Length: 193
Image 1 (cartoon, rainbow, N blue to C red):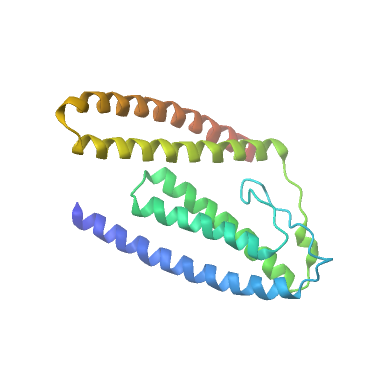
Image 2: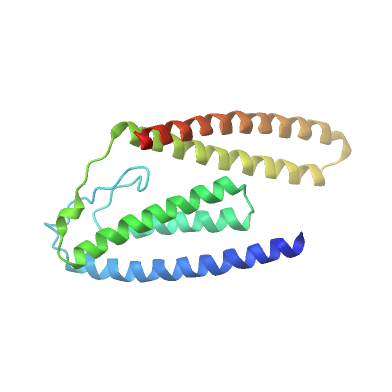
């Protein structure tokens, strides 16, 4: 089992290194484009809010958001968080990267009309809610981890209280996860329409 974890960890490390290299390359291209785009042309780039929660007036601002997602992905992998959370971070990174890469390629070819696009507001609201749920699940898992660590180091008298806290957090996590799954199914239904 330890050998399997070591191999998986090595595979993730290679993948993360490749992603980081591609992100550096995209960042360089964005810096070049930011210097070329006239300020009057540089309206606020419009992306789906579930991918880029903050609107920016430069491509550099979006690179910073992708970097933040990449850091979250690294953290999720290194902490060996549940697979669905790693998958979520990975999908978010991939979506952000792909969208910005498309825009950069379009701008490099002189196609500025790629700056504006409209999206379904119901789908957008569900995505935003889902993002909030994923962050909440992350926090709950971190809290459970902290309490479990505390449990191993605490004196015997405190152990039952800490165990109760852990159980309460696990129940909250389970309820949260059930709601997250409902949102994911709802989103799938909208995508299928």
